[in-house]
Length: 207
Image 1: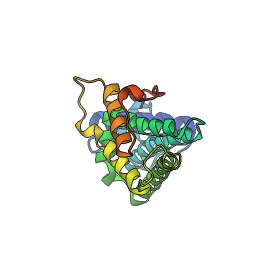
Image 2: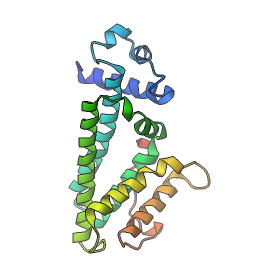
Image 3: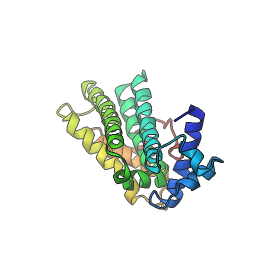
Image 4: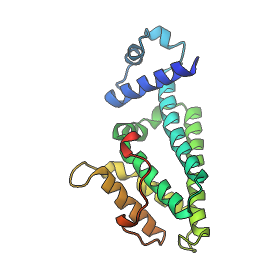
């Protein structure tokens, strides 16, 4: 894409249209109209609707990666970093439900080479998450017999399903996230209640 500012504008516009209409129903001219361009002008910036989808999904995963990079750089305890990683993943999964739906349903539309790039980013995310879990084990916070690679995949997989069943209602999103953190800590042999959790540093609705 030609210029970073244009790229951000186009990705923002594409994300809005994809979330509102769904990827199959979204039209390239609708996205062009969002940024004040003609359809033909938009093709100077991207090759296809599928490329815009890739850019939306890549940015989404890259943001998650950067969150974990920031958590790993934190000088706090291994327990605090672990809680932060669990919380930020739950906030991601529950923060923008239309975007989660897009992520879950639109992958088949990607070009194979673009899908491969996203898998690499997701592997990078899982590696960072695994380091945080490993740090907790080595610090004596989590169970010493934890199979870190397997547990990491279980934790990520479990949290990735939260958006599928979550419905606003009796509990606030924050309360649901707190419970999720406690459940995940328990899976690592860490006894905790909601009252024991560190104060959250992020807000779910920011995703």
